[in-house]
Amino acid sequence: RIVYVNGAYVPEEEARVSIFDRGFLMADAVYEVTSVLDGRICEFEGHVARLHRSLAELKMAAPVDDAALLEIHRELIRRNDLTEGTIYLQVTRGAADRDFAWPEGAEPGLVLFTQAKALETPKAAETGIRVASVEDLRWGRRDIKTTQLLYPSLAKMIAREKGADDAWMVEDGYVTEGSSNNAYIVTGAGTIVTRQLSNDILHGITRASVLRLAREAQMVIEERPFTLAEAQAAKEAFSTAASIFVMPVVEIDGVPVGEGTPGPLAKRLREIYIAAAKATSI
Ligand code: PLP
Image (tube, rainbow, N blue to C red):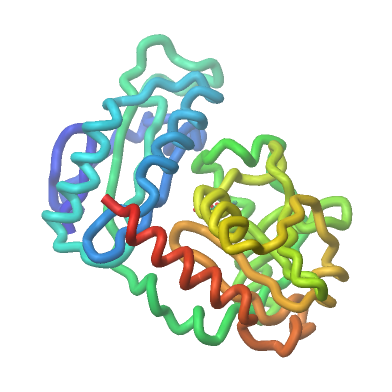
């Protein structure tokens, strides 16, 4: 695989970053994951806009401009013959002698790599996934997409130990989001419920598009927190993220949701979303 590191395209074995990089020492870094379908980038504009928001919240500089970022994405697709998969992008504050205070004038670091993966028709989309609830113990700025991912990673492992595929995190009795995705239920009346945007959750790029597309398809949406009990009693449940699009959730803490199979609304939204993502891919 050819990866991008601070201005150079190199084989992955040759890629090097400093041990003083603050991304490595302190998770002083932000990232994006963008999906690629048919060799084209999905939702590029949304991901770049969120990247700028994350950078601004942490007073971090962008290492290159947006046109250059797009070109790097495209070059990696070309060099790796990527037709379907994801592109990971990470910006770090840079390398400096270890200190909690941010260094003056450190050069921001930029790393990108591709991962080939079946996104459009993975097996999980047909079967749906099972989730287990895990207490949400992350920090208070989950709206910033930092590489501080140890707790979500631990939450996923706790869920796996419980025999589930992923974690839905719960705070004060209400679901916040999945370990790396936004969480939704469909009520008996057919209303889509998902937590409103705040510092408590990541503002998903997929979430924004799915809600817009759902409204365009005359679906009813309520943005509010929901409890685990409400989710277990719901007609359907699903998660969204760039790498899973719309993923049906068929079981929550061992309780089947609805029929215990992917629901019609989640399946329809998945189709609508993928069609729209392809139509606007660049
Ligand atoms: N929530 C969290 C905690 C995430 O890590 C992610 C994606 O990585 C999402 C939600 C979904 O965001 P997006 O749709 O932009 O991929």
